Image (tube, rainbow, N blue to C red):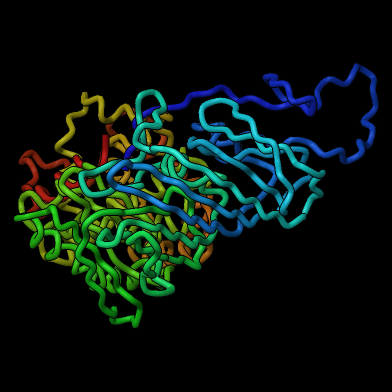
Length: 511
Ligand SMILES: [Zn+2]
């Protein structure tokens, strides 16, 4: 999980004339003017969704229901060609709207009409409405495109990882830009059909289930199809293309389990299997804590040795880099990524600033698993983590509740984030805590949430004013004082057995 650059572009609004101006539209009225009802002239959709950290991520004026991503890919050249069909509905009268995308666009059609496209900024594809679009209109947007994603760079960086035998489209928050045009923000979730034609003998793994077996195509090619019918944030859609052993099974819940293991893993392969094959067990355990598993399939992908160095909670099927298996099995990273299926995937951030709702809870889940496995309690992990960062460490200067656009995956978001969850648990007591978590995942299922909403829910269920613990642990710089016996004891806390593996997982996840 990482973002490698920040497109810190100042918020821009677009006038109806199509010129870019800074500031807020509609403030040009002369003193003394009375507000006049304005005819609903079609206006441009905004180039962003108001994200405080990444103002131009996502787009306004429409809401996507479904992406049909149909690709052709050649590992030998990294050449990607495709057609994405976007089913959407306009949320305002539109003269134009934006998609977030980087590859070369050959054509765009809107409800069958050929549309003119231009580019603005780093990743904004501007689509002029070929006819005026009324609010509430159903839109079918067909984009044909091609490119070499590994050579399509933004600030020298690509979110598409080319490997010796294929590629990984796995990144956060920027991933879609390199393989499908999107309204690229967690506020606009959609369902996905993803299909990729590759040379026969290459495997393609993606989200959800396979609606059918791979189909042979002309030219010794095979088309793989995947489908997810639950709302999915665009950064949680993924591709793993290459040489994979695919292992299928049925979970105790009856759901399909589809795991995939890169054949490049060599001696790390067994450790990857000994970790990822426990996914169904971990999902079962987590369901007892967080509420029913929100998706239609389970699994994991062990990526190749030359792929990603991190792991990502791609929906229904996290992708793990090879580093997690270098010292044997590591179920803590599996727990972390599976916990995200509830915290992050089903309930997504409304603003990227709310990243603690993802990483704090996924990290805390590893502490809970440690306790379950008899490798150290959550309290012992809190004590040891707290003691491991001296008061003067810069670690304590990063606020998990508002880390800044360049630090959304800072270690403080993980470690202090988990400590914050533990302090909230201590403040409300176990009885309330174990009602708050499933209430959160139920009330915001398939939607979004903010830290303020989580605090309000925790206060409602516990009947307590929790402002002090939220402010202290999420929004105040410096090491908070704690009153637990162990933290105030003179002897340093003992290292829990799980510490090394949790630490190693966090070091690969954060940056
Ligand atoms: Zn995470």
